[in-house]
Length: 467
Image 1: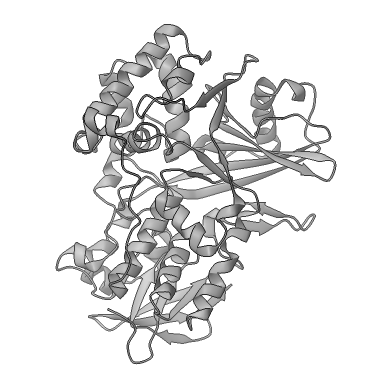
Image 2 (image 1 turned 60 degrees about the horizontal axis):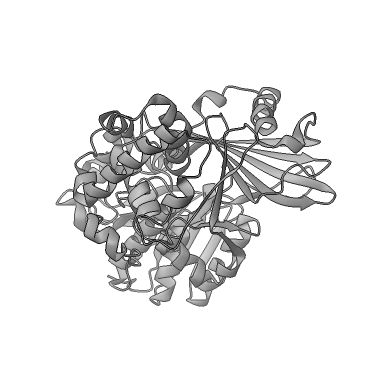
């Protein structure tokens, strides 16, 4: 299907899902009209202007892994791939003064990380053996086995593998909470298993971590030009108030200023925002619109710290067993060092005030960074993303709606498409999942393109069961 009679495809939302959809539509020669309520593209993975000093601040640090093939493809289409700095070494500490490294060896996947893992001091030798036994089980499960665990939590899977609580606290929970924005006791086992199977075990390159070397907003600026060059439009600071529906099809959108007719609509806003755009008639006509009401959210807290002297030399640091999961070295701002602390699944932090948050974060900073002991930040900024992602619980697996009405059966509005990390992409609540949903929606409309293929597992990994 393509735009007909001069009517465009309207994309509601300019986050990653909306950007991905609009860029794919433009690439297919389809006129897209994008409406974004914020003043810049990027949504929850964007930046904002700090009124205190005029600096662009990212909502939170976002990470791309080597296995995120569609997100990498989007960066390439936007011409910003060179603005991603890649890291082959991951740094870990448990706050006892030692830093462990995780880096691929010459061995083939899934054994490439084993030599460096065996040297990690944050786990004892018996604890490392427990992890390796569970990793072997994860390898042997394969994709089919992973899906059989989708109705249980990853915590239940780890208990099945007889993982000690200290190993769960210092290893499994740190990685899973960072990747899925949910702790092991709540996250779907299928979502967490995917992280390990595809992010760490499948091939030698998927674990590589990419960090933007510019404010996140700079990554998305080229999207506007690509859309407009194809005859489309991007309207920033323009929220959609409602979707027009004639009882059978969606016919356009209504903003505070006008109504725009549309041949099709891609609704690329978070699931709770989607719920405010549709009425009872649309919910009755499309079962997908009833599913998001069953989803929950999970918050993320980003704490931006400026120090009067250098406190961190490594590019990043994973904190095992603490409240903070990651510290990122953001370089120098003038003569001050900028460190960004990230707390995922931050429900218990949302009720804390600024001073309480900074005090608690600094406790972990002092543990992790010896150079910071005795210092307090010259400046601190706490960014609460209360509705950062959907909560990928086992119950949510059955409630994630398909992107295309074709996959929704008879009860769907034929020209309404959904996009967002909450959609049924097979991925947890990630930027990769959001981009995949946008690509899939655009491909369903234009009949062109589609998803970028995953990096295939290595020969040894496939032979052992990762397929």
